[in-house]
Length: 370
Image 1: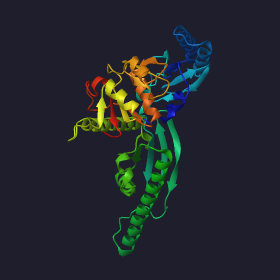
Image 2 (image 1 turned 45 degrees about the horizontal axis):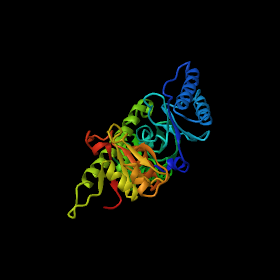
Image 3 (image 1 turned 90 degrees about the vertical axis):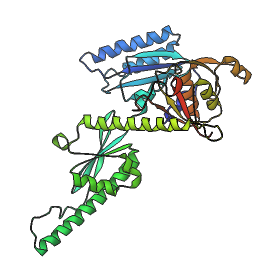
Image 4 (image 1 turned 180 degrees about the horizontal axis):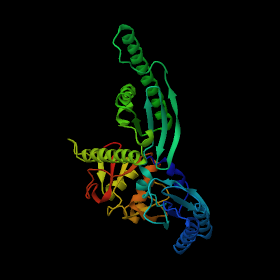
């Protein structure tokens, strides 16, 4: 997960209101229920010590979702009477919740919004292709490409003139496949798509696949036509889920290999809160790996005003010259440090090779240097 979108949260001091709202349920009473949720969230924050202006800002923001058709949910981060960030979620949260804490409670985003692969579905035929952009929030038209229109069909004749015609058909197919592949490569670059699904007959899919740039080959999934010529939503979601599992599995394998010491006894990965705090202070975290149910995720650490000011014990910050410090969850504190140094973060729970003891305590990191 690229953490750059979280930067506005770390440009201002806390405390912060962090609210997660489930919008996956839609009934005739949805508007009324969202109003009730808005009031409940505001009261919950007030009970935890949030200021009135921030409680009102959260209440208004949740009320603004009363007619929302968002399929999953939304997170809200507010302070000083203003909602600073309100990302849409790719998966519903486990119930509505509101917290008032020194740092924004962003760790749940790794699972609820972190791995939401953007997908381009290309409906391919011999004359061209239609592109469709698919994600957790729905679908959008992503353009089309039209190749040569004639000739595109083979004949069953065997005389010389018909064989010549069939050669022209083959040339037309090859030309159109190349046109589609070029357009699809441009579409992927413009949309930053993580996944390309080719839909069509076997030969048409294969022809386009072979002509895509090599850098895109690992992003391609091939599928037959769905109902009515369109791919079913569940087929797209299955492909997106497999992509998330494969990515998490690959990163976990990389972590397992990197934590083994080299000939000089140094490793390229660390785990456990003390080692991660040290790496964060030295700006060495390249990718933070989180297992949200791990015991270290909610372990208390101490933070200062700057993202690299964190410690296992409060006295350590005092020794570093930090005059003010606050307790915070380890996962949120490490994500703040990672975001400040343009590092990434990833939940590994979806990995097919995930284990309860990896990373140890639920937190680990790949390092920028040993």
